[in-house]
Image 1: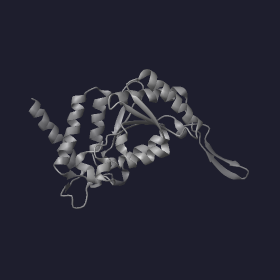
Image 2: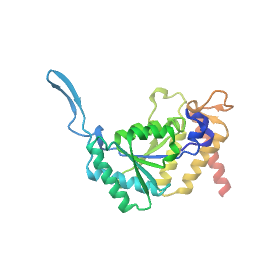
Image 3: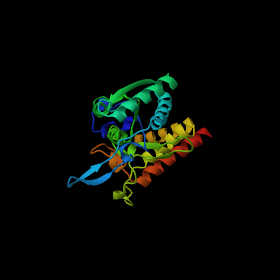
Image 4: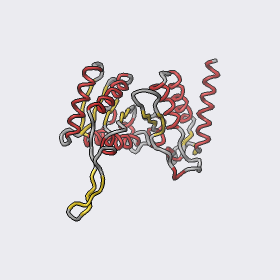
Length: 259
């Protein structure tokens, strides 16, 4: 979601990113990253590396249902991304996704898009997307590309959700070991990940909205971590600790008003 306070942090034009709110649903346990056989062998005197892009019908069915559920809670628009014009595995993907969504999520508008076109469309006109579902490798690439719509990976929450039990909610950017201990990391993606947990895992939309509003409030206070600070933007450069404390202060003030 592109926040109005950070429109100028994106490398794209304001009119392109304003109002963008995209959810990427990425399958995490299959595809070319985990398919077998895989390895590096010697064939005809030279090394050959290979991986196997593979999905079972049940794996596709599972992620399609997650995406259908997410889309139904948002704008009821779902775009399935594949490469069905070239890959057999994508042809199966498209068939299963179509079957699941049309039968079990009739209120969700389903479309399909080839991954190369989707990569271009995310930059050309991202507002056309609401919820995107894709396999592991395509989702890996597109989710990182989508991060620059909001200006920084430090603003991007994510979730790993299974069929049952609690999900794992964490920033899309990982642990950032290159800046460990320097008080430079942006904590807002972690806070927004907690908001996503409240919204999608715990069914606590009011509390989710409170966290999202608190993040916007500190941005309105013109506080910025290094990854979202722009030259001559009139904002104060702060570290991870100060930004987190500012969000906590806003939430405490909200609680006092509620009481």
